[in-house]
Image 1 (cartoon, protein in one colour):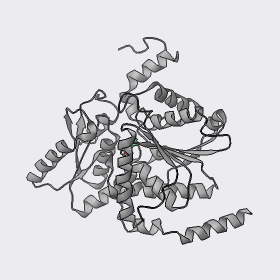
Image 2: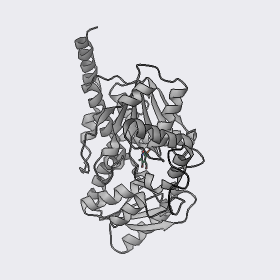
Image 3: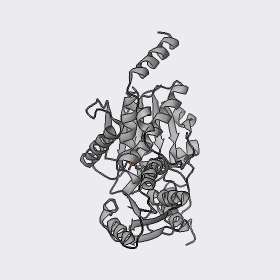
Image 4: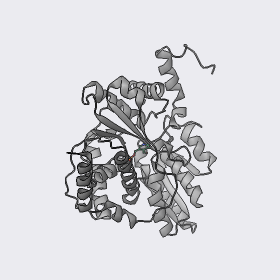
Length: 364
Ligand SMILES: Cc1ncc(COP(=O)(O)O)c(C=O)c1O
């Protein structure tokens, strides 16, 4: 079949599909970042691994050091504005990327921001936490076993603000809500446009999986657009069962918002929980090696919590021969790189063990 015929068939198929574009357009969005982000072919890595590796550079969304959150917040803040909110309240770990970007977004739209953060082992005046203070968020550091479960403390902050006559808007951990997931419907549509422009047929997509907002929104959008390549979600914190529950929640919520039959086929996808390490944020040796490999082959920095874990999952699968020569793999770089600076001691130790740095490198 000629290329022209293939394209015509594709366009005909596309016309028959329910338009996710039209459904998305009903929802208000506040512009917070410059898109499209680049879709890059990783030449050196592809050669070394003998598969074609592409990376979607959502670390380059241009709100305060970038990442996935600007796309999510564009839709969530539109909801906050609709409700007349004057303050955003959110929560996360002490090195929360989401706290950094919610603070930045609040400033951009002229709101205040309160962030409730866990007093965990990465609490240092470094990385994301430093940026949050610089942008003037009100920071409440609290003791908790689990930073994914700070909703109660955040609700207390909401009640306090309301008692003072303020109108706060709560954004849950990781910024994931039904509306914010629309940001990754838009992000996936943008990616699909870039793939079509360059005539790239993917064999797999890899994303990090935290709450699963990004993964679910991208999976649904690819399927709605007729792209059936396998999806791999690399969990950064939860076990498979919990991730699957999250996927069900966001899938149902998005189908509802976009008027899509929620029983529709999902195609091939897998969530992997074996790359987490001991706990969320554990900089595993495989993750640190993956960060080094990406840095040294492509000059792209990954982070120790999300994108490094995602890449370590892909590298493990590559080693297990999941992917063959000539196949096209897409990695989503969802950002998070400021956390590198809070992990500097662990990274230093890793480089000493690799012989890249001499022992006792730092003078402290
Ligand atoms: C850099 C980065 N990537 C990925 C994620 C996870 O996204 P999701 O919760 O939608 O799975 C987060 C969440 O905070 C993040 O900060």
